[in-house]
Image 1 (spheres, helix red, strand yellow):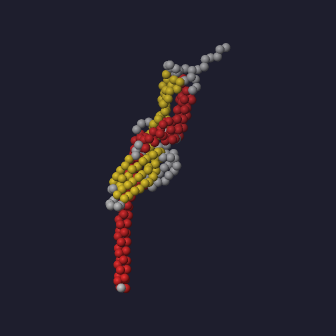
Image 2 (cartoon, helix red, strand yellow):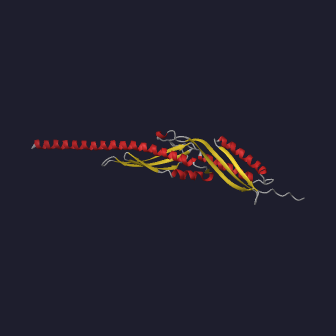
Image 3 (tube, helix red, strand yellow):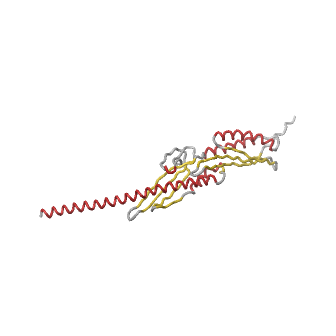
Length: 259
């Protein structure tokens, strides 16, 4: 009787060890699969991040940006770059948005030197969500947020563009001696020269074109053009242009006072 009890106890012990070893084998299998899926996830993150950077370059370089609405236009363009890729049983979706102005470190070293957020530059927030399966009962789910940037100084460019347009409008607010390019151009040119110097000091180029019309009233149509050249993209450098166009009615000179 004692021997039977002892044998039963040993059998139960052996069975517990066997079951535990089988559980560990399953856990190791799941761990290996999750590790493989995570590596695939990291590869897809870099690929999707690169696609967003390339797409942002297309958004920025396709046409000049209207200064007052440039930030909104860029934000819509970046949001439209949402996409998904799948590889090795992992499906990854990315939702990019125009980022903020705070400094953020990041570890997407595959996208160096574009990883992270830099104050004053064009920062993009990448929100990743992935799911996958590598066999029966083995699933993978992961969500991460990362930051990338391009060295376009969007807000500084918009601010300088609008300041130049304001300077032109203020110059045209003063009555001209007559409605001619010669009379009006001197005032406008002086205002733009000062703005062009300020823009150059910030790394931009600024130019102005305008035309004078005498009918039905004296008016000036003008367009300010500002550009940042040689922005470093993922595979090449590119330029980004901004513009602000307007038409201003020029005040007529006051009539001479009667004696």
